[in-house]
Length: 133
Length: 402
Image (cartoon, helix red, strand yellow):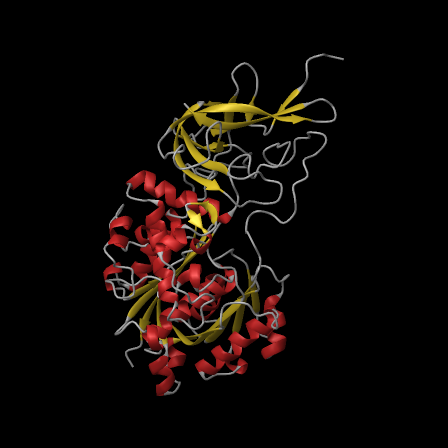
């Protein structure tokens, strides 16, 4: 038994470690990027992909402040689209007040992780969002 | 029978939108079909193809409807294309007539949606597992909705409007509320609308917040409703009565597109490119341009969506949607009235019915049968719907010269 609690990322495209970051499958032919698996590139139909790192810094390109959501989802929260060096990423805007005075279109943000809790096996899940940079 | 170049709407109808607790999905659809057949002056014996759409009723709606209105053994296509389902049903009937498989077709869209709540949010509480096991296409150990953005429709379309604002500037909470104010004002003249109450921008902004900047009146109204249409080939129309020829409305363009790949489409659905593509194809097919339009019914599922479609449909120059709205153009007394029916925000949005109901609205104006809300002298109109995922249907309609 190890004393160090195991960690798992919320999704498989979040890589934990010293510098947590996102990764994507990049089409080797045209450079289109996908967070999930594709049989062929949706842009050029070629079938070879490589794994690439997504920059942690980005610009908030669109957002909404969700006040009504499905059961079990804490509101309000800020959902947004962040342009990370040319790759669009979907994520929540965290570590700031969820209101239009604190969240602005075009603001600089950076990836941040947080603990989602620990399961029955002592495994801790790590989520991610973007915080004002 | 040979392929037909010309397609006409011979008859069309929409039911009252709103709550119909005493009518089920089949009752509502049958009501619209019976009225559309009567409007066309034909019976089920004349119909050679039937396309029907319904998302929440459990499947096989076309055959269920035949059992209410007439079973003749003709081919039935049950279609499903999100909020573009109605337009897809109509386009399916049009394709069959165009191909020369028959000379008359029927399309119907129907939905029971009153009290459906928040669409896209899922129906049951998420039970976070006691053990974090990666599953699904993203290897997620817990629910993603709410942790990585939002799947709710008001939230998705809020971002669509905000993204436009980021790109071109000029948007604000108040601007989006004013777009909604217009549609609620328009609906006061539409007895078939779900809501017929005018609301000020201030009232709209102070209403319940759903997903900033969309408050409740800025979201499409969940309601029950159905719409149906009879389409006929140009050749067949010539054999019908002068009255039928006079009231028929020409389908100058019928286009359906899906969303082509765009860089960000995996994280935020791109409702712009497929609408622009559909609009370009439709204007070319019809041989008209946006400047020729007398009215437009566009897919204002949220106030934030209406803004971007002014631009996508070419009603203004690129980036000019805010100026277009602020000029007063899309009000019913403006240069190019948009959503004089009240739109999805006030008339309502019974998903599968919407893509035929907006064509009914345009037809009523072109036939000069729209009563108090008639746009005088209307000759050409455009109807647009978007189904997220995505599908875009655009029809351009022209008044008969007969």
